[in-house]
Structure formats: structure tokens, C-alpha cells
Length: 222
Image (tube, rainbow, N blue to C red):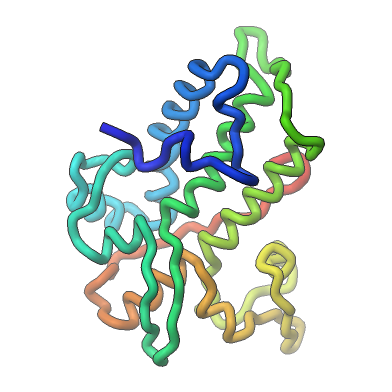
């Protein structure tokens, strides 16, 4: 039984260096992180009730290795192009693609420190590029946040919210000390948009969806 993500999925800017020193240890740890953390990300995005429905649709019945049977869940996992309620095309690359960025950061957090009985200590990790690990974590977590999506349907966002415009690479509009999202956000490649437009097509698609947003992290990865 293969996991929905394997080390082969982490290429380019998501390269984990699995083929380098201690490859067996690193690959084993990656699988452990996938099996532990992927279900949590599913629950955070779908909410408890839709998560239970997803598991019921999968064989085997788990989030980290299950293959869904129905089209709405297959498209959610693997991606699709859908036509929105207002007649526009919306590309979604799939929740599996979203997960790669968060699992990447989770894995690098492990490589940076190893838990001992006396606390945390740094691991001696060699990198294949000159880009600091912290910067790579920051960049890839931010990409995951973009693909996860933001609940733009809440009309307005208070000014003191985290700076989504920086993360999304979008301009900001202002209205009486509030900031709002431009219409183009509705058609971005995000998991939020997939569920939103599916529910616009039929309220029966994901009626119990309750998403917890992922927030940007700072230079300390917190």
C-alpha cells in the first residue's frame, strides 16, 4: 500500500535530499511524517464531518494512502478544471499538491533538530544549494498557504489580519479602513476555490465543509 505522497513527489524547490546521506532513515521518517500529518491537514481543511465522508469514500479508509472512489473526491485529491457558476474556468491542481508544501516544511523541521532526552539539538545537515533552510521553509510554506486558499467570501478582512496580500501576491483594496480581495482571487488555483465552486454548483457536494485557514509563518517558522 503506497502513500498518496512519496519521496518521488518532492522535486525541484521541494527537493528533500532523500538520495543523500542516511537515505533509509530519511525516507522512513518522511513516510512517518506523511502518515501522521496528512490526516491532520485533511481534517483542518475539510472539517470533521466532511473528513469522515472522505474516509468512507476511500480504499483503504485512511487519508494518507486511501484512493477515493467518487469523482468529487478524486478531483479534490488529484485536481481538475471546473467551470464556475459564473461561467469561467478554474484550474485546481489537487489537494495532494497542496500537501506537498506543508509536508516539506514538516520534514525539514525534523532535519533541523533531533529530539533527545535533554531537549533539542541541531542535526548536521548538508544542503545542496546556498539557500538557507529557513528561507526554503518560509517560501514553500507560503506556497502551500496560497494553494490552500483563503475564505474571501467573508466580505471584508480587518486591517490587522496577517498580510495575505504579500503571500498571495495580490494588490490590496481599501474601504473605510478595511481591506478586501479583488474578484480575481475567486479563480486562483486553491483548494478553497474548488470546494466553494463545487458547492455553488450543488449545495449537496460538501454541505458540512468547515475549513481552518493556514497562516503564513515568520522567519522563525512559527
